[in-house]
Amino acid sequence: MALAQNMPVLSRLVSSSVAIANHAGGIIREILKKGELGIVEKENARDLQTEADRAAQRCIISSLSKCFPKITIIGEEGEEETQVTSGKIFDPDLMPAVNVKCPSNLSSLEEEEIVVWVDPLDGTAEFTQGLLDHVTVLIGIAYSGKAVGGIIHQPYFNYQNPGAELGRTVWGVVGGDVGGMPLVSPPEGKLIVTTTRSHSSSTVNDAISAVSPTEVLRVGGAGHKVMLLLEGKAHLYVFASPGCKKWDTCAPQAVLEAAGGVLTDIKGTPIPYYSTAPHRNSTGVLASAAGIPHDEYVNKIPQHVKDNLKA
Ligand code: AMP
Ligand code: MG
Ligand code: MG
Image (cartoon, rainbow, N blue to C red; front, side, top):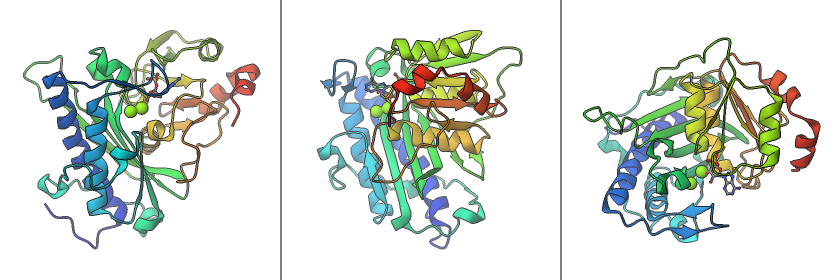
């Protein structure tokens, strides 16, 4: 359904991005079904790109820029996949609109002030290994350097429950609502930490040991790990490494903060999402589920780990 043009831009952008992320999830499933993944190594053998990453980005960028021509969009994949005209355009008005309330401080944003960070397929390493529930599509919305809105689509949600509806899309606006999933608090009396499974290092492990977890969940994808915080399956996401990028954290941060959680770098400093910010989160990532004392865990991260991660 067409969205009223007098609605706040942020509400229209979140609603349209839910529809577009959902469509991109369908593209990813189709490509995997055909089995022609077209894998390319990017920085190294642990940093992969597939045809699903490329096609999903082409669709997201061309569709979003058709609806919102003045926003700045930064996507993970290369130049060709960033051309706004290179993908088949999906019209988000073909999907039912999502009713997104906009808090008053965000209700008069102009398109020109908005930066969108797109990770068309987060968890590519796991995707190529068949760990399909680790895969997400991430569309993060930033204003004034802050993550203010986010969409996390899980194309393979329920894939191990035949007969159940496949895929789901979660969204959030900071200071507003979270939609698309029930929020669950993590269990009391435990400290479950989630972290990388494919980009570990001694610094990553030193930071985890320092918070004394009762359990460590090593899984793929920044989007998937923040989903574990929202689902009550983990208390903390600890990643003391410079490998994560702004498109990995912008959408998850906005949804987590809309739900009452916190995401910063490993030193407790906010991550800047200006269009001119370096892509790399060189000082790591620390995220806490709602109700977890974030600052106490920042203080537990050893000084040598913090010193190792320079801006
Ligand atoms: P992970 O937790 O290892 O699944 O990583 C979360 C996100 O950060 C994924 O998009 C990874 O591709 C990215 N990432 C983390 N570490 C690295 C690295 N060392 N090199 C390239 N990408 C990385
Ligand atoms: Mg990613
Ligand atoms: Mg990616």
